[in-house]
Image 1 (cartoon, rainbow, N blue to C red):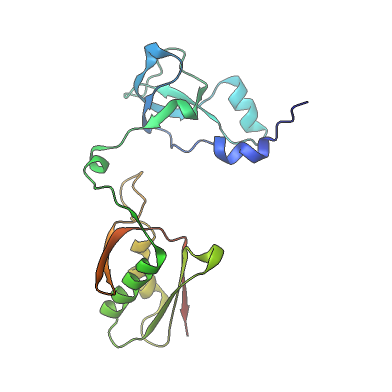
Image 2 (cartoon, rainbow, N blue to C red; image 1 turned 90 degrees about the vertical axis):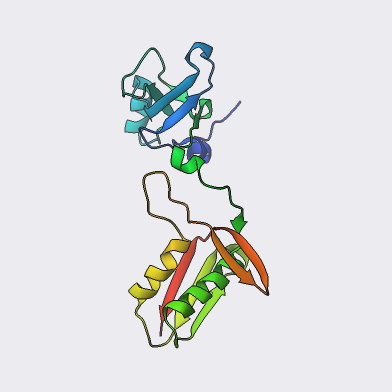
Length: 190
């Protein structure tokens, strides 16, 4: 007997694309392959599941002008791939920058922004390896330091562009570059 554990795969199956995202459909309906926009599916099955507290799992496909055409409802998330915007196509592809290099960059940026203030910038270990801890005494407040550190976590631009901008840093005389992947930057003002 096969037992389906819905909770285990809910995070994987839950919809990741916001409504209105432009996608390429490559599912089983070959006649419908092409560019569409997605909305969460509103068929009876999906609506009932959502009312029972389950995450939305399927999409409906719409034309670019927002009109639904044909029977393209209840589409699996694996049948669509988001298309990149023209802005994103113009960006270079960057490697992930290890947290220790992002910490070195943050240390330099803080020193430049607040000369004379001594900052301790440390990276986590083990499961906390994606976290950075910053502590200092005197000088600027938490808000000022947070404003300098925030761009390492995310860039707050147009929708869909939330990853941090790529940075370059010299460590031990060697240049390193990439997109920092930081889970948390904790600030401790003594």
